[in-house]
Length: 117
Image (cartoon, rainbow, N blue to C red; front, side):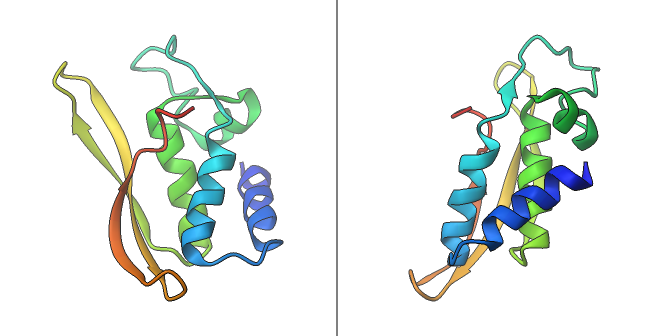
């Protein structure tokens, strides 16, 4: 797990990116994981970081866990929040506080790291 997170952080830090660009870059990395809709609601395989990095299978909670972990370690404040969809399904997203002087951004944004994957 640590190796996977460190690899993403290293890749981001090798670039000369603003905070906003880091958010987009991390998203572009994480969306390449294989969304696995066949994982049942009780399986931890797509939710726990060590399982995600070993199997490459992921669900919404896993996407949010990875981006939140990476953002926080890059100094970009982030947290996970969960909501219930209209079909009574629990879904995870991330909140990200982006402060970027280059683009004139100082905003708390809701991030949906799952559905482009």
